[in-house]
Image (cartoon, rainbow, N blue to C red; front, side, top):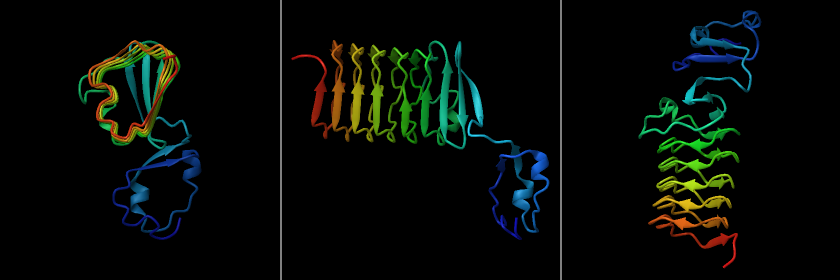
Length: 220
């Protein structure tokens, strides 16, 4: 590594290296690279590198890969419900761009991703039965969402003012959409509603000024 290659990289705190510590020590690092030399080294990095982790249900764990900006929730059973800005991953909300919920998870908790504006993609498996209140409130980076047939309830404010949403697919198992669930999704253009729908709550799909087409999978 050449002279001053990392000079003035004053914010450099962590370096992730795919090799071992022994291999790192064989690298010739020239002078004026103190930020690189003084940074914390993480060896044998892989794509599955876990930067942060914890629990979010009796049998659920969460991990964040800080390189892919992906939050993964895995295990079995229900996710805990939370209050505003009180999730276990709250300190990392500004790096979470992708949310992967694995098979086995049965609910998405209240306020799980409340105002997480950097989330771009969310994957919901066919084991989830409920999307909690305010779960994706103002997740303005989301552009589309597919709700599987296993879901029966979308609670109120679940996707409130997700202004980036353009397409929503609601599976055949959904029976109820809570009040203001999709309120203010101002760029929503198309919505598919499954044939199992029974109740659409107060102001559930209001101020969606660009919504032009609704596709209903049942009969008239």
